[in-house]
Amino acid sequence: NAGVTQTPKFRVLKTGQSMTLLCAQDMNHEYMYWYRQDPGMGLRLIHYSVGEGTTAKGEVPDGYNVSRLKKQNFLLGLESAAPSQTSVYFCASSPRQHYGYTFGSGTRLTVV
Amino acid sequence: SQQGEEDPQALSIQEGENATMNCSYKTSINNLQWYRQNSGRGLVHLILIRSNEREKHSGRLRVTLDTSKKSSSLLITASRAADTASYFCAALEAGSYQLTFGKGTKLSVIP
Image (cartoon, rainbow over all chains, first blue to last red):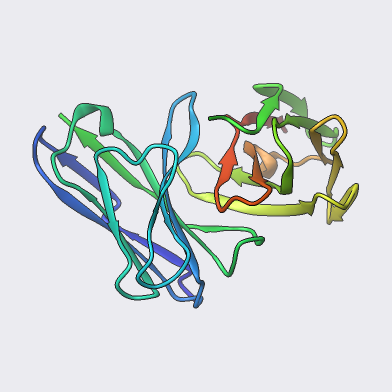
């Protein structure tokens, strides 16, 4: 089992460019999440999904969009990248609400 | 907003010693979880304790929860060099879907 797979692992963007981060899980989990991790800030929730076709905003959603067209995939989009979006992005999934999360290995994004 | 706050921010111990990390949170919770993160890697779920539980064990890990003080502690017994990592607590607020993480405790175990 691969668990949670994130692609790409590294990316450098220029300010104003767009990109999509892909998260795929093979555990048939209902819930999926996108977090960002910045030095000294811990992890902050960007968006989450409680099932196929549903999405909701987390703590820091501005500048990001998400889609969950298939249960196993959760996409995070940056429409116009800004230097403030330089961060490490983690995707996670869980079977339902009150369970531990399985995390991917992260995407390190630099916006110059 | 930050829900879990770990203490200390950094901890350095000798191999074989016990390591204790503390976490405080702000609101009523459904459960509290602990995760480990090795440098440059993703987070790994260690243990989950529900709001109606007071203590839980998993191998060398012992977690306690005091809902009256809104605090939790993680004890790692007989630490090993491989335990060197950052440890995060995360609180699931009652009625919420959002698991909120603290800033972590960086543990160094010296061989």
